[in-house]
Image 1 (cartoon, rainbow, N blue to C red):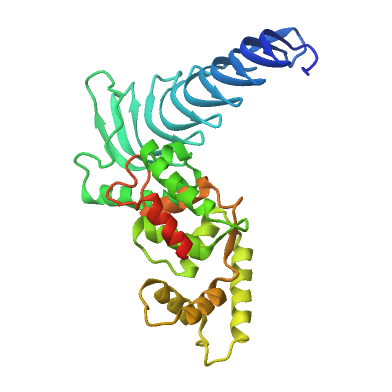
Image 2 (cartoon, one colour):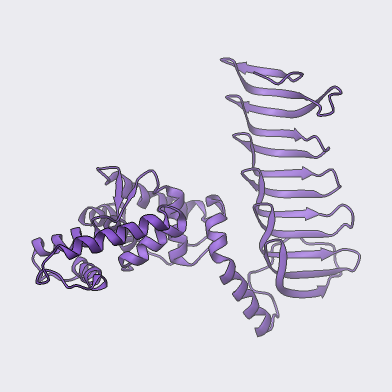
Length: 356
């Protein structure tokens, strides 16, 4: 159904807009209709290349996915500004250039959720100066300013400023460290990893999910998965904190799991396990790695006690969240984030998860 006064001219399929077509909507002032979109449709949604026209006079030409501006596109704003670059979920995210219509100034660099975020450079055309630096929340927090003589060359600056002194470079690193968590949690997955790295992460993720038989992912499985990926041993608190950070569980759920574990430990004779919960977890981790002398029954008991309540519902343990855990562990953003990391084969990962 359409709003009163709107109409669609174009192709249909099974009662849905599908193919090429143009959508017209009623103007807010009630005087006539205006074109709102012309381009490709898939199952009643804007999908593919199309032109979106907005009430204020702004026009977007580019790619769409499920009714959102997505991928490459250009926005001609009503105030004269022009943005060319990447979009995610309808917002400027990724690499893009913005020409300020009023002044002719130009910014090129990284964006995140409609704001400048990451390395970029800003050209002041009237003063023929360029500021190169690190941007956070739409502001340049550290960088250098120099003159430019030639026409603008639209290339992203290197992550390290040429000729930057130690003080400036130190400030850049400080900003990146301060903004790292924000960027990991908010950068679209397609920009967080390149396709090769994302395929490797997806394979590991699917191995973990496919080994789930009760609709949950155990903390031991996550521990084994990260061990297979990075060769790093994580204790329960670290794993739980990672899950809380990416939103797979809440802080209250984590606290409840710890309290239930402590309560369970109190029921076990002191001769069976040490009283200190941290020591219990430490011993469990040690057992999983190299304590071959301990019998299987004792090892299983310790695992059950220390990790019984540490489970994550599969529907909360999404690929998106697991990928962000990987990014937090590697401490890297962008293409090549897994460079130098020897990811085990799917068979090896399956074996370790099943063992966990």
